[in-house]
Length: 326
View (tube, rainbow, N blue to C red):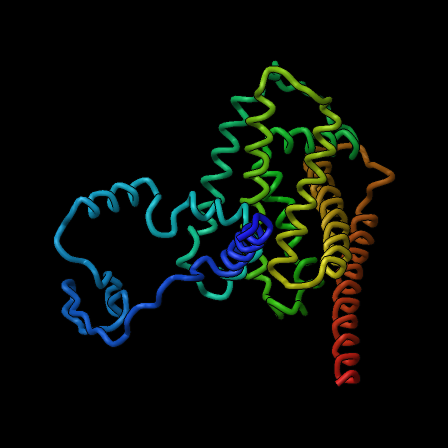
Protein backbone atom coordinates (compact mmCIF):
# COMPACT_ATOMS: atom_id res chain seq x y z
CA UNK A 1 0.00 0.00 0.00
CA UNK A 2 1.42 3.37 -1.03
CA UNK A 3 1.61 6.36 1.28
CA UNK A 4 -1.19 8.20 -0.55
CA UNK A 5 -3.47 5.16 -0.37
CA UNK A 6 -2.76 4.81 3.35
CA UNK A 7 -3.65 8.48 3.89
CA UNK A 8 -6.91 8.06 1.96
CA UNK A 9 -7.78 4.97 4.00
CA UNK A 10 -7.12 6.78 7.26
CA UNK A 11 -9.24 9.69 6.05
CA UNK A 12 -12.12 7.34 5.18
CA UNK A 13 -11.91 5.79 8.65
CA UNK A 14 -11.92 9.23 10.23
CA UNK A 15 -14.96 10.30 8.18
CA UNK A 16 -16.76 7.07 9.11
CA UNK A 17 -16.00 7.72 12.80
CA UNK A 18 -17.23 11.32 12.48
CA UNK A 19 -20.58 10.23 11.12
CA UNK A 20 -20.95 7.30 13.55
CA UNK A 21 -18.59 6.68 16.52
CA UNK A 22 -19.92 3.12 16.80
CA UNK A 23 -18.86 2.34 13.23
CA UNK A 24 -17.12 -1.03 12.94
CA UNK A 25 -18.25 -2.38 16.31
CA UNK A 26 -19.67 -5.88 16.31
CA UNK A 27 -23.41 -6.08 17.10
CA UNK A 28 -24.51 -8.15 20.05
CA UNK A 29 -25.63 -11.75 19.52
CA UNK A 30 -29.44 -11.68 19.81
CA UNK A 31 -29.67 -15.47 19.85
CA UNK A 32 -28.09 -15.72 23.31
CA UNK A 33 -30.44 -15.38 26.28
CA UNK A 34 -29.09 -13.85 29.49
CA UNK A 35 -30.38 -14.08 33.06
CA UNK A 36 -30.20 -10.76 34.91
CA UNK A 37 -28.53 -11.26 38.28
CA UNK A 38 -30.12 -8.06 39.58
CA UNK A 39 -33.85 -8.50 38.84
CA UNK A 40 -34.05 -12.05 37.47
CA UNK A 41 -35.45 -11.15 34.04
CA UNK A 42 -34.55 -13.19 30.95
CA UNK A 43 -33.37 -10.95 28.10
CA UNK A 44 -31.28 -10.80 24.94
CA UNK A 45 -28.74 -8.15 24.05
CA UNK A 46 -26.11 -6.34 26.08
CA UNK A 47 -28.36 -4.78 28.76
CA UNK A 48 -31.35 -5.83 30.82
CA UNK A 49 -34.47 -4.05 29.51
CA UNK A 50 -35.97 -3.76 33.01
CA UNK A 51 -33.14 -2.49 35.23
CA UNK A 52 -30.41 -1.63 32.70
CA UNK A 53 -27.69 -3.87 34.16
CA UNK A 54 -25.06 -5.13 31.73
CA UNK A 55 -25.30 -8.70 30.49
CA UNK A 56 -21.65 -9.42 31.28
CA UNK A 57 -22.00 -8.45 34.96
CA UNK A 58 -20.44 -11.22 37.02
CA UNK A 59 -17.99 -11.56 39.85
CA UNK A 60 -15.95 -8.55 40.92
CA UNK A 61 -12.59 -8.36 39.15
CA UNK A 62 -9.78 -5.84 38.76
CA UNK A 63 -11.66 -4.45 35.77
CA UNK A 64 -14.65 -3.78 38.07
CA UNK A 65 -12.40 -1.63 40.27
CA UNK A 66 -11.13 0.24 37.21
CA UNK A 67 -14.67 0.93 35.98
CA UNK A 68 -15.83 2.21 39.38
CA UNK A 69 -12.84 4.53 39.73
CA UNK A 70 -13.31 5.85 36.19
CA UNK A 71 -17.01 6.51 36.80
CA UNK A 72 -16.15 8.32 40.05
CA UNK A 73 -14.19 10.92 38.05
CA UNK A 74 -16.65 11.05 35.16
CA UNK A 75 -14.50 8.92 32.84
CA UNK A 76 -16.82 5.97 32.40
CA UNK A 77 -19.76 5.59 30.04
CA UNK A 78 -20.80 8.94 28.49
CA UNK A 79 -17.60 10.44 29.86
CA UNK A 80 -16.99 14.19 29.85
CA UNK A 81 -13.51 14.01 28.24
CA UNK A 82 -14.73 11.76 25.43
CA UNK A 83 -17.73 14.04 24.78
CA UNK A 84 -15.45 17.09 24.65
CA UNK A 85 -13.19 15.17 22.26
CA UNK A 86 -16.19 14.50 20.01
CA UNK A 87 -17.20 18.14 20.30
CA UNK A 88 -13.83 19.12 18.84
CA UNK A 89 -13.75 16.68 15.92
CA UNK A 90 -17.42 15.98 15.11
CA UNK A 91 -19.53 18.74 16.74
CA UNK A 92 -22.44 18.76 14.27
CA UNK A 93 -22.70 14.97 14.12
CA UNK A 94 -22.56 14.76 17.93
CA UNK A 95 -25.40 17.28 18.28
CA UNK A 96 -27.44 15.43 15.66
CA UNK A 97 -26.91 12.11 17.47
CA UNK A 98 -28.09 13.63 20.75
CA UNK A 99 -31.18 15.25 19.23
CA UNK A 100 -32.16 12.01 17.44
CA UNK A 101 -32.11 10.10 20.72
CA UNK A 102 -28.60 8.62 20.88
CA UNK A 103 -28.09 10.10 24.34
CA UNK A 104 -25.63 7.45 25.55
CA UNK A 105 -22.94 8.77 23.19
CA UNK A 106 -22.50 12.04 25.08
CA UNK A 107 -22.23 13.51 28.54
CA UNK A 108 -25.39 15.39 29.67
CA UNK A 109 -25.01 18.71 27.79
CA UNK A 110 -26.26 21.13 30.47
CA UNK A 111 -24.10 19.51 33.13
CA UNK A 112 -21.16 19.66 30.70
CA UNK A 113 -21.83 23.35 30.05
CA UNK A 114 -21.84 24.15 33.78
CA UNK A 115 -18.52 22.33 34.31
CA UNK A 116 -16.81 23.93 31.31
CA UNK A 117 -18.16 27.41 32.19
CA UNK A 118 -16.96 27.05 35.79
CA UNK A 119 -13.50 25.99 34.62
CA UNK A 120 -13.39 28.94 32.19
CA UNK A 121 -14.37 31.34 34.97
CA UNK A 122 -11.66 30.04 37.32
CA UNK A 123 -9.03 30.09 34.59
CA UNK A 124 -9.92 33.63 33.56
CA UNK A 125 -9.59 34.84 37.15
CA UNK A 126 -6.12 33.30 37.25
CA UNK A 127 -5.12 34.84 33.93
CA UNK A 128 -6.64 38.27 34.64
CA UNK A 129 -3.92 40.57 36.00
CA UNK A 130 -5.92 43.81 35.98
CA UNK A 131 -5.47 46.01 39.01
CA UNK A 132 -9.15 46.57 39.56
CA UNK A 133 -12.37 47.73 38.01
CA UNK A 134 -12.74 51.41 37.23
CA UNK A 135 -16.02 52.89 38.38
CA UNK A 136 -17.61 54.79 35.51
CA UNK A 137 -20.77 56.79 36.00
CA UNK A 138 -23.46 55.70 33.55
CA UNK A 139 -25.24 58.67 32.02
CA UNK A 140 -26.22 57.46 28.53
CA UNK A 141 -26.57 54.34 26.42
CA UNK A 142 -22.99 54.43 25.15
CA UNK A 143 -21.44 54.25 28.61
CA UNK A 144 -23.99 51.60 29.62
CA UNK A 145 -23.08 49.51 26.56
CA UNK A 146 -19.33 49.91 27.14
CA UNK A 147 -19.60 48.90 30.79
CA UNK A 148 -21.75 45.89 29.90
CA UNK A 149 -19.28 44.69 27.27
CA UNK A 150 -16.36 45.20 29.67
CA UNK A 151 -18.11 43.03 32.26
CA UNK A 152 -18.94 40.39 29.66
CA UNK A 153 -15.35 40.16 28.44
CA UNK A 154 -14.28 39.52 32.02
CA UNK A 155 -16.90 36.78 32.26
CA UNK A 156 -16.52 34.90 28.98
CA UNK A 157 -18.70 32.06 30.21
CA UNK A 158 -21.73 34.33 30.63
CA UNK A 159 -20.96 36.14 27.38
CA UNK A 160 -20.97 32.89 25.44
CA UNK A 161 -24.20 31.66 27.04
CA UNK A 162 -25.92 34.96 26.29
CA UNK A 163 -24.72 35.21 22.69
CA UNK A 164 -25.59 31.62 21.84
CA UNK A 165 -29.09 32.05 23.28
CA UNK A 166 -29.68 34.82 20.72
CA UNK A 167 -29.06 32.33 17.90
CA UNK A 168 -31.86 29.93 18.86
CA UNK A 169 -34.68 31.66 16.97
CA UNK A 170 -32.61 32.72 13.88
CA UNK A 171 -31.24 29.18 13.58
CA UNK A 172 -34.78 27.84 13.81
CA UNK A 173 -35.94 30.22 11.05
CA UNK A 174 -33.08 29.61 8.60
CA UNK A 175 -32.17 25.95 9.15
CA UNK A 176 -35.62 24.49 9.78
CA UNK A 177 -35.87 23.02 6.27
CA UNK A 178 -32.48 21.30 6.22
CA UNK A 179 -31.70 17.96 4.51
CA UNK A 180 -30.10 16.15 7.48
CA UNK A 181 -32.17 17.51 10.36
CA UNK A 182 -35.46 18.99 9.06
CA UNK A 183 -38.09 20.73 11.16
CA UNK A 184 -36.13 20.97 14.38
CA UNK A 185 -37.98 22.59 17.28
CA UNK A 186 -37.07 25.50 19.54
CA UNK A 187 -36.29 23.20 22.52
CA UNK A 188 -33.95 21.27 20.23
CA UNK A 189 -32.48 24.61 19.16
CA UNK A 190 -31.78 25.32 22.82
CA UNK A 191 -29.67 22.17 23.10
CA UNK A 192 -27.92 22.99 19.81
CA UNK A 193 -26.73 26.25 21.32
CA UNK A 194 -25.78 24.54 24.59
CA UNK A 195 -23.38 22.30 22.65
CA UNK A 196 -22.13 25.31 20.66
CA UNK A 197 -21.46 27.19 23.89
CA UNK A 198 -19.41 24.28 25.25
CA UNK A 199 -17.41 24.09 22.02
CA UNK A 200 -16.61 27.82 21.96
CA UNK A 201 -15.77 27.85 25.66
CA UNK A 202 -13.26 25.09 24.95
CA UNK A 203 -11.69 27.37 22.37
CA UNK A 204 -11.55 30.22 24.91
CA UNK A 205 -9.88 27.90 27.41
CA UNK A 206 -7.13 27.25 24.86
CA UNK A 207 -6.93 30.99 24.18
CA UNK A 208 -6.60 31.79 27.90
CA UNK A 209 -3.91 29.17 28.34
CA UNK A 210 -1.95 30.67 25.44
CA UNK A 211 -2.43 34.18 26.81
CA UNK A 212 -0.77 33.11 30.07
CA UNK A 213 2.51 32.52 28.20
CA UNK A 214 4.86 35.36 29.29
CA UNK A 215 6.00 36.25 25.76
CA UNK A 216 3.94 37.03 22.70
CA UNK A 217 5.09 36.56 19.13
CA UNK A 218 2.27 38.52 17.50
CA UNK A 219 0.30 41.60 18.52
CA UNK A 220 -2.95 41.39 20.46
CA UNK A 221 -4.95 42.83 17.53
CA UNK A 222 -3.81 39.96 15.31
CA UNK A 223 -4.78 37.47 18.02
CA UNK A 224 -8.28 38.99 18.28
CA UNK A 225 -8.78 38.78 14.51
CA UNK A 226 -7.60 35.16 14.46
CA UNK A 227 -9.97 34.33 17.35
CA UNK A 228 -12.97 35.80 15.53
CA UNK A 229 -12.09 33.91 12.34
CA UNK A 230 -11.66 30.63 14.26
CA UNK A 231 -15.03 31.12 16.01
CA UNK A 232 -16.77 31.66 12.67
CA UNK A 233 -15.10 28.59 11.17
CA UNK A 234 -16.09 26.45 14.18
CA UNK A 235 -19.72 27.52 13.90
CA UNK A 236 -19.68 27.04 10.13
CA UNK A 237 -18.38 23.47 10.45
CA UNK A 238 -20.91 22.66 13.17
CA UNK A 239 -23.87 23.94 11.16
CA UNK A 240 -22.71 22.10 8.03
CA UNK A 241 -22.29 18.77 9.82
CA UNK A 242 -25.58 19.10 11.70
CA UNK A 243 -27.94 20.32 8.97
CA UNK A 244 -26.32 18.83 5.86
CA UNK A 245 -26.36 21.84 3.54
CA UNK A 246 -23.47 22.47 1.14
CA UNK A 247 -20.79 25.00 1.95
CA UNK A 248 -22.50 27.87 0.13
CA UNK A 249 -25.94 27.06 1.59
CA UNK A 250 -24.45 26.91 5.07
CA UNK A 251 -22.47 30.15 4.65
CA UNK A 252 -25.32 32.44 3.59
CA UNK A 253 -27.66 31.01 6.22
CA UNK A 254 -25.07 31.37 8.97
CA UNK A 255 -24.33 34.98 7.89
CA UNK A 256 -28.02 35.77 8.30
CA UNK A 257 -28.07 33.97 11.67
CA UNK A 258 -25.16 36.13 12.85
CA UNK A 259 -26.83 39.29 11.54
CA UNK A 260 -30.13 38.47 13.27
CA UNK A 261 -28.25 37.61 16.47
CA UNK A 262 -26.47 40.98 16.34
CA UNK A 263 -29.81 42.79 15.95
CA UNK A 264 -31.29 40.83 18.85
CA UNK A 265 -28.23 41.69 20.93
CA UNK A 266 -28.68 45.40 20.19
CA UNK A 267 -32.39 45.15 21.00
CA UNK A 268 -31.65 43.41 24.31
CA UNK A 269 -29.11 46.10 25.20
CA UNK A 270 -31.63 48.86 24.45
CA UNK A 271 -34.34 47.19 26.56
CA UNK A 272 -31.94 46.68 29.47
CA UNK A 273 -30.85 50.32 29.25
CA UNK A 274 -34.49 51.47 29.31
CA UNK A 275 -35.14 49.51 32.53
CA UNK A 276 -31.84 50.66 34.04
CA UNK A 277 -32.44 54.34 33.23
CA UNK A 278 -36.03 54.15 34.47
CA UNK A 279 -35.20 52.69 37.90
CA UNK A 280 -32.14 54.91 38.35
CA UNK A 281 -33.93 58.07 37.16
CA UNK A 282 -31.35 58.89 34.51
CA UNK A 283 -31.95 61.81 32.12
CA UNK A 284 -33.69 60.88 28.89
CA UNK A 285 -31.49 59.85 25.98
CA UNK A 286 -32.89 61.39 22.81
CA UNK A 287 -31.42 58.66 20.60
CA UNK A 288 -32.56 55.59 22.55
CA UNK A 289 -36.16 56.20 23.59
CA UNK A 290 -39.01 53.81 24.32
CA UNK A 291 -40.44 54.41 20.85
CA UNK A 292 -37.07 53.46 19.36
CA UNK A 293 -37.16 50.17 21.30
CA UNK A 294 -40.63 49.42 19.92
CA UNK A 295 -39.43 50.04 16.36
CA UNK A 296 -36.40 47.82 17.02
CA UNK A 297 -38.66 45.01 18.26
CA UNK A 298 -40.84 45.24 15.16
CA UNK A 299 -37.78 45.35 12.91
CA UNK A 300 -36.29 42.26 14.58
CA UNK A 301 -39.55 40.33 14.24
CA UNK A 302 -39.90 41.27 10.57
CA UNK A 303 -36.25 40.36 9.95
CA UNK A 304 -36.61 36.87 11.46
CA UNK A 305 -39.94 36.32 9.68
CA UNK A 306 -38.33 37.37 6.39
CA UNK A 307 -35.47 34.94 6.96
CA UNK A 308 -37.96 32.15 7.60
CA UNK A 309 -39.84 32.95 4.38
CA UNK A 310 -36.64 33.16 2.32
CA UNK A 311 -35.32 29.84 3.69
CA UNK A 312 -38.66 28.14 3.00
CA UNK A 313 -38.86 29.63 -0.51
CA UNK A 314 -35.34 28.46 -1.38
CA UNK A 315 -36.04 24.88 -0.31
CA UNK A 316 -39.42 24.92 -2.08
CA UNK A 317 -37.74 26.10 -5.28
CA UNK A 318 -35.12 23.34 -4.99
CA UNK A 319 -37.82 20.69 -4.67
CA UNK A 320 -39.67 22.08 -7.68
CA UNK A 321 -36.49 21.92 -9.77
CA UNK A 322 -35.81 18.36 -8.64
CA UNK A 323 -39.33 17.29 -9.62
CA UNK A 324 -38.93 18.87 -13.03
CA UNK A 325 -35.61 17.13 -13.50
CA UNK A 326 -37.20 13.77 -12.72
